[in-house]
Length: 279
Image 1 (cartoon, helix red, strand yellow):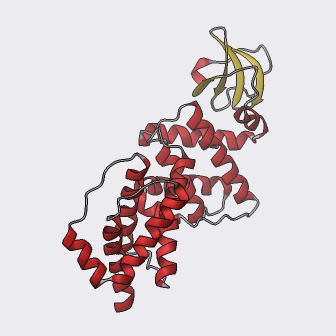
Image 2 (cartoon, rainbow, N blue to C red):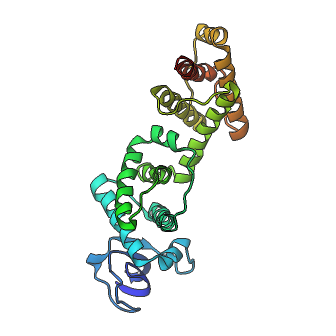
Image 3 (cartoon, rainbow, N blue to C red):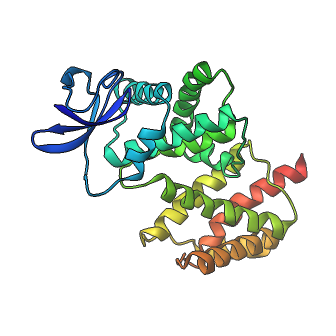
């Protein structure tokens, strides 16, 4: 394994089995230069590199501080070994990019707003808990607390590493759709739903199933006629708000939901409205 280009102390482009690859590992390129050999035992990640395409990831590696690269690799190794996560070349590049920029924001005291935080906590609790543990490691390194907003976005990346077919961007768009429907109902009912409640978790979980079914064109259970009538007559405001949310979702995302899905959404919505009314 021969170095073709040193990217930083912990990464290099190497020639391995007559093919150029990106090798990553703690200190593997420290005090090394082109044509030096690398100890294979130091290599923790090895990805195929296309020499005709200067990928953003390779460019980012070359610009990232040595200590930052080392920390990211330590975190990835910890996630893979202790929490059974898997990072292929694509997902590794995404998590590397996210963590590097997260640390950069912390060092510069820059804050981001995550308006999907409560939905992320509800839908991906295991990933959020793991993101909190990861944030503790970053806190020790940067000596600054990692805000909940940052932890929420990190959770999307950690959830993605479990579900290979869903990128963090797709997860974010999916969660945005739920948030959008909630906003429509809150505006129609002129209220703000209490977020840290079982009732809100129930609504978000149901919307999650509903939107996911729409995305894959899966059929949902039809509501009984008597239930539809009961909700229309007994809780017209909640039913109307649910109908508006469904209609807005269909228009914005060009996806179809069953006509009577509004009934189930209205049931969850009414629980939230009743909770707020009753204190």
